[in-house]
Length: 96
Image (cartoon, rainbow, N blue to C red; front, side, top):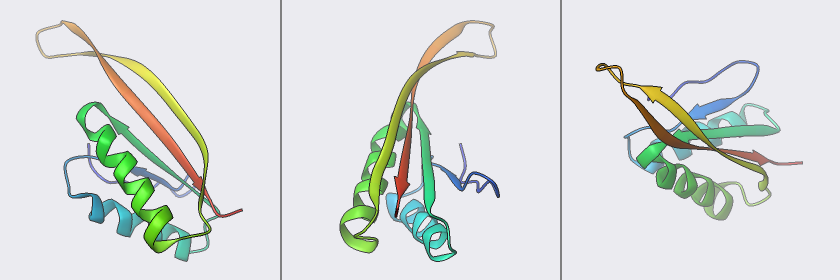
């Protein structure tokens, strides 16, 4: 997964970069006038997404609140045709 920004959703996809890379992306979204930012991650990147949300809330955007957290399991088919379950999380931060 790579970092992407959707114009209508303000979504940050968390992958294998250090958490501060995603913190910068989230803070940039808030400074750009967004009221809400979604942080999405799957699998091992979930802890990085939680770290990102907490760093943003505690250090950079103190008035940001966790508006919503959604957890899910996605079924992914690998190259060999086998299905595997991968956990996913979606954290929504809001300044309103």
